[in-house]
Length: 476
Ligand code: NAD
Image (tube, rainbow, N blue to C red; front, top):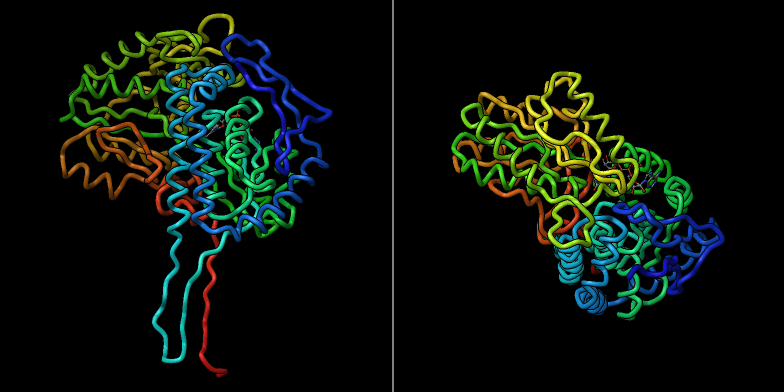
C-alpha cells in the first residue's frame, strides 16, 4: 500500500542512521519511517550528480527524451499505486490523486518533447564570420519540492532538469515523500544512468544550507512559501547561483455582473476546495459585482456546505484533511482575525472532527481590507467573498497584495477582458475557467510570487545557459 522509504543516490537506494515518521493526515497514524540524509549522504549525492551531469549533458537529446518517455509511461501504468501513496500521505481524495499522477506524467512528456527543441540561432555577420547562439544545460540542480502535490511538484523540477541535460538532487517534502520516490523508481526502471537523478530527505534548512553553497550546484529550484524562497535566494546569491522560484499566491477572482451566477458560484466553491485549498493558484479572494453579490454569495456558501469532507480513500469524499498539523492552527487564526475585524463567517471556520488535520470548508463574507487574510495566503479551504461596485475597484483589489501568481475572472465582456489582460498583475490570467496552467503553458509569478517559468516553451530556459560563438574563417 505505502512504499518502503529510502534515499536514492547514485542509482542506489539507501537507509540512514536517523529517521522521522511520515503520518497519514486523515488518521494521524504512522505510515512509515523516512530516512534523513547526513552531510556524508549529501556529499555522495553531489559527487554522483557531478558524474551524472558529465554523462547526461553529453547524451543526445533524443535519447534523453526516450528515457523520460519510458519513465512517464511507467508512471501512467502505476497510476493507482502512486495515487494510493499520495492519498495516504497527503490526504487528498483518491480520484484527485489519480489525476495528479497523470498531470505529473504529462509534465515529463511535454518536457521530453522540448528536449529536442532547445534551438539556438544564427545571427547575420560579416563575410568570413559566423555568429551562432547555443544552449547548454546549466549543471547540477538542487531542487526543493513542497507537500501539496507530492508527485506533480517534484515532476515539474525533475522533468525540466532531465530534459535540459542537467543532473538533479531533489529534496522532496518530508510529509509526502512517496510521490517523488515513485518517480525515482520509474526512472531507475526506465534505465536512467546512476547519478542523474538523486533523491534525498531531511531537515529542509540543513539540506538547503549544505547543498546551495556547494560549487557544482548551478541552479536552485524551489516551490514553496515566499519567506523560504527569499531565504534560499539570498543564500544562492552569495554563491552567484541562479534561482527558479515558484512562490506563494493569493489569487483574485473578479466576478462581473454579466456572468452566469449559478455556474460561476458552483465552479468557484469546487475549485477553492480542491486539494483542501492548498494550491498556490487556489482561487481565494472573490470580488463580486454589487448587482449579483447576494445571489453569488448564497450559492457559493451552499455549495461549500454540501462538500463531502473525509478520508480521501473513502468513496464520495470531495475534500480531505489539510496536509499537516501546522495548517489547522494557522487557518483558525486567520478566520478569528477576520471575524474580529468584522467579517461574517457564513460557513465553517473551525477544525472538522477530532482526528486528522481536517478544516471545515469556510466562506468569509464582507471581509475588511484590514483583516490579515486580505494580505496573507490562507493555503487552506477558506474563501473570501467581497462585494465591489465596479471593475476599477475589482482590479485595484486584485492588485492589492504582494503576490501575482494566478488571477481569474468570470465575464464575457470583451472590454472587461481587454482591461484585465493589461492591468491585472499576475503571471497567469484565466477567464471563465479556474484552471491556471497546462504542461504546454508557461507557469510562474510576478511580484513576490517568484521568478522564472515552468512548462511551456519557456520552461527549459531556467535550466540552460547561452553560449554565443563567433567563428572567424581566418585569423583576424
Ligand atoms: P514552510 O514555509 O515552512 O515550508 C514550505 C515548503 O518549503 C515545505 O515543503 C518545506 O519543506 C520547504 N522548506 C521550508 N524551509 C526550507 C528551507 N530552509 N530550505 C528548503 N526548503 C524549505 O511552510 P509550511 O508550513 O510547510 O507551508 C505553509 C506555507 O508554505 C503556505 O502558507 C504556502 O504559502 C507555502 N507553500 C506553498 C506551496 C506552493 O505550491 N507554492 C506549496 C507548499 C507550501
